[in-house]
Amino acid sequence: QVHLVESGGGLVQAGGSLRLSCAASVSIFSIDAMGWYRQAPGKPRELVARISSVGNTNFADSVKGRFTISKDNAKNTVYLQMNSLKPEDTAVYCCTADQGYTTYWGQGTQVTVSS
Image 1: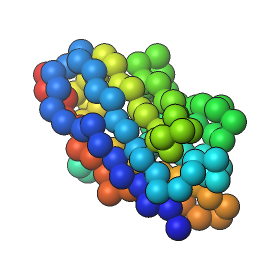
Image 2: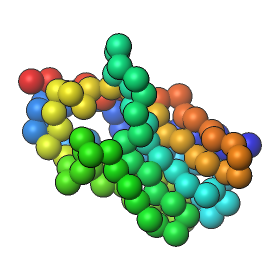
Image 3: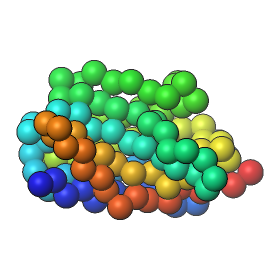
């Protein structure tokens, strides 16, 4: 089982930046892929970014060029760097870890972008 703990959310003005962190309870070498999802009130959950075990990444079109995803294998941590934030980025951001046929979820962290 994989336990995920997110941190780094908060309130930021439009145009600002935040970095989210997701610490895994196991070595991320054992995880096939890790990602970040977000869900805003009244909207469906969407995949924001994903990074595979070999470092391949993909992003939602809405965040391309603004967000980056990276990982630190030594710290078993994945990061989501969010730049040029917009009010529409406001959501609860959740970290996920895919291991075999199982997807583990963190509890989420709130990101609020004020205009």
